[in-house]
Length: 186
Length: 395
Image 1 (cartoon, rainbow over the protein chains, first blue to last red):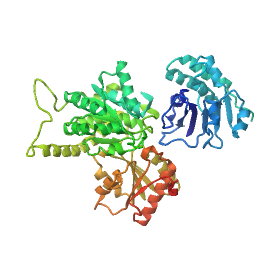
Image 2: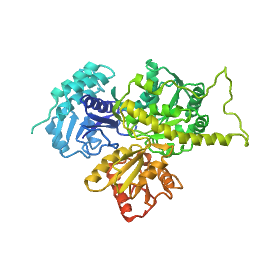
Image 3: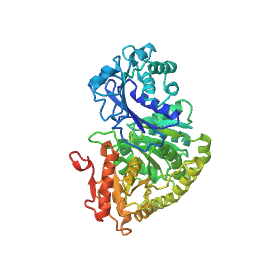
Image 4: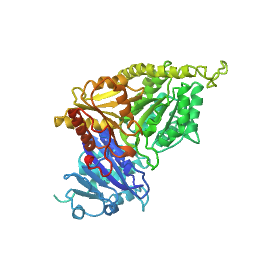
């Protein structure tokens, strides 16, 4: 079983991202569950969402405490919440930022860090507004590359089915992020 | 068709496939997305039903009662304070013998305010005359609504039914769900055949005044008999559903690794799902434990619990609610039906109130405690509160 935690801000689509990712895994024949932190989401406030994926039915009905992957949709969260909390030693952190993986690696003091400028990609595809771009679909494309757990084509198909609007733009944003994500040195 | 659905979307799909003609509902977290999804089905022309927006849950149930009395299927959904506000009408619905099916998303009762899962809301309605069924995943939520109409509408049953799901853990969690084919559900359920209805051509009075020497007691006695009959109908319908839709539900209690178990955990709802993973982990360490997930709290599975007690040396009963008096709800009733049937110790554990997360780690500690009770043969404490702040034993 792999456990994935999303950190975003209310309005960025973290909960939707957790569901689209579950859908992509599901389309590849996996068992999934996706859920928000059982709280009351508010626009702009830190939001946490989760996806579980396994080859067998998932019986776990509790929150994720030791994720294999952490996806950060908003770099400003790095100073607001401990995004590394409970992450497995060999886990991977994927951050939406213009900064390099090396820079984030030393800032977080964690070895497996990937970065992608999902914000610029989202703006390029006119997803959301210039000031509040919606980066959730782009970051999923980067996740496909970083994790190697799901095909980018499946992620794009899941986005096309699940996105309420601009399906093709959202799918292309995922593709761009897949190509642009930086996983750094070693 | 396989779809990714939340528990609430699964409930809405279960209702949609059962073709109720009237939905009357009032929103409350964490139930709201059930009735929103149904409203969208109706607005999109995917569901042929009248949607009545009402000013309260009390009115929602009143509208369902009135509609069902005209001879159509109805559906509604609620949680916590909404269910409490319905209380008077819940008893009316069952007393009037109307097979209404309702989704209830378990949520804690305030104060303090909490929208998270807790079974006090439904436990407080255990004597309302409704069949109560607790579920562990979204598939079971959807399937149970379809099965519940069939069971409730049997003319020897005629009892309304609550299909209960845990707040957020199911209601807002998306899982893969097999959505049955509409035609197959139509064939399985058949047209609603009311035992009686309001009919201008055949006038009759309903709910009239009965003097103390009148048949009030007999009405209640017939309900008691109907709960007995419901047991047989539940068995038959679950079996038929399993065969038709390729499922594997146990009617009353789902048992997991209970054969030769030194101790068995008795639970309701999603705790029973997580507990299965924990049971496997315990077996790897050579600890023989099992889990029994009670699906129907009403009718209460007395005979099944007695059979369960014969398989083991100890029962640990987990409740996500507390009863000020006998201790905990499932615990107290389990112990009551076991009286004089077994000598094994039975211990209650209260945990997860107000949605506090129930993790495998804490369940493992409860299993260990159960094993030590099994070994000693006596209960150290009848009902234990697990995981209170500052209590180091469970952290």
